[in-house]
Image (cartoon, rainbow, N blue to C red; front, side, top):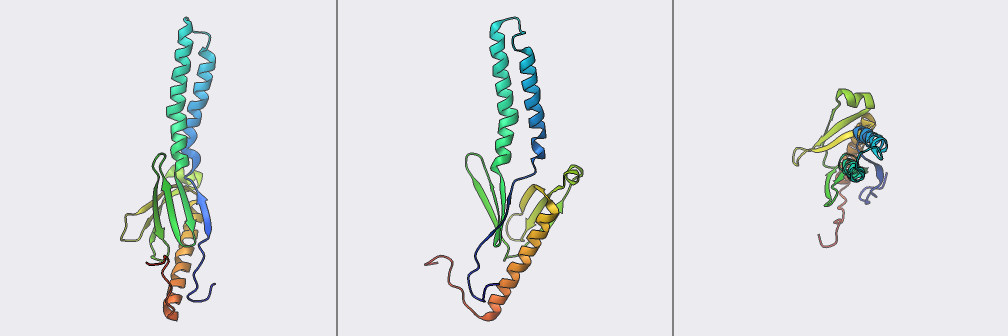
Length: 175
């Protein structure tokens, strides 16, 4: 514990993505497209049809395998000692944050398949901003406990600093 009034360093607790189970169908499509292309290539009546087969296989892989993978890879969840950060977007990036010190409620929803995989969806609501939704979080119970602990620690530190009468300098000069 730092002394009252001392700035607390922000430390990374966890950085993760949504559960990779959503890529299951993409993996099946990739296997099927590769198998079908290998089977039909060279067995078609006209030579130009082999090129059409390769073009169709490439388009299917691009749309049904690569794009879903990039969408999955573009969304990250970060938990630090001060806040929760959600980043997503392939071209233009979007970032949302929620501070532990302000406090928020944690709601966990788990469907049948999510329970089988140990995943779940966490919704964080502070009553002021739009709810922050962490979809398909792996090890959802561990993440829930970590978030609850961070809220408690942040509020204890904020209460202790308020009781000590120490005025903290602004985070940014001139603010």
